[in-house]
Length: 521
Ligand code: CA
Image 1 (cartoon, rainbow, N blue to C red):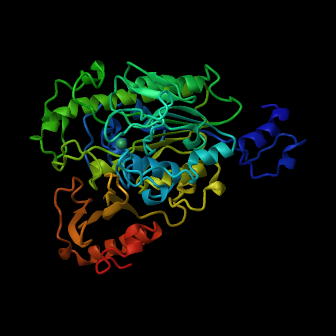
Image 2 (cartoon, protein in one colour):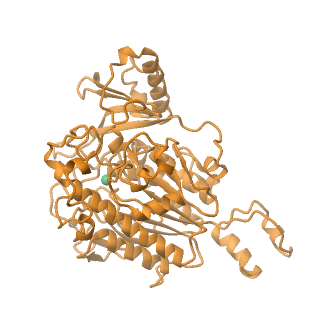
Image 3 (cartoon, helix red, strand yellow):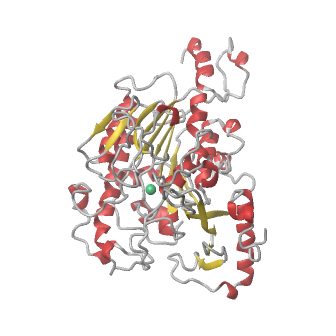
């Protein structure tokens, strides 16, 4: 880089040089710690569980986990894992689309981000707060170009269809899909997105200007094409002198996963001749569930997503961006797929729903390895800001933990989180029109490296209704719900840990002192 442009770059890109600007001028080249703000690419398919990645079968990774991975084919993730910091224990605290996405962008728990329940037109109380500072707001303020491609699902749907003003973008009741107008895009200045819509081969998107695009193509493929065009800057999508933050939110392997109408044939071919016993190998599955026949299509989507992620990585490589680009692969929550005979694919405290992929590659700064840190959804925003060199600019009301120093130094720095909070909210009261005007925090729990404890309360009495208590070390498939009276010391330790988490999060359970006689607030 020529000196003339160097100082411009310092001011423009928000350099983290740790040396005064004046000292850069007129000095001959010598060793100094200069760090140009990295690009950040965050790819997260919807509903992809952590065990649905093939590399977990490889002995280099297998030794870090105590479960058997799904029989999936993910060649691109296998390569990416070798180059990344791979988390065994990243958790989606409130394993549902909107709440996770709110935490991802804001670094806050759902009751603070405003996204407590999945957004739809019956739930005006759940929508990402306009006044919150998101990761994209911070990066944009520091000279980044910010792009969002794919599913957003963070806005309460309103009649604001840009092509039919005064109308919703769909006719369903309640309305789930939504158009996000520019004033609600939180720093994203390239937009190619929708609220929520589940037809993987006929997706639609609204672009930066609010024009709708209806596409007849597998959505991850199309979104990868748009992302690659953005990386190549084919149509001057971005100011190439600035770093960029690119989010790609793919809908598969979320349902539908019922037939070849949903996924690609070449991906389905990999699984179609396997029996259900060969596909759903977790010992906690109920193969008698009708849903079991979805397994080959779910895994076909996983392979489909892997292929498109691989294409994005290839473009990053070809463009010479790899070294100074942070690339994350994750998901908003997992998928039970017949484990625990659960009809709900998510929104449950089981590993299949909570434990998500989290791989982070940053060749300039991170040593590839596998770590067992308990990463919560609100930790992602401050960790990415810390890694990008904007640790000082993490907003004060962020609740997540910044893992960046630990990741950068490869040494545990300070007291890193020893547990994660589990959150389940349901609709509370409704008004005369049937609109949800409050939410009810029906369950809270704590997950440590060894145990899971979840308390569910009665909506009317707020008294204890149900306890789930698993020894995740001895019983990784969570098949044996223990009686906590048999383990008083562990029980008290977990309740104390839960109390600390609730207090720190300023959770409604803490504010109301829910189960005061049990939880030592
Ligand atoms: Ca989701």
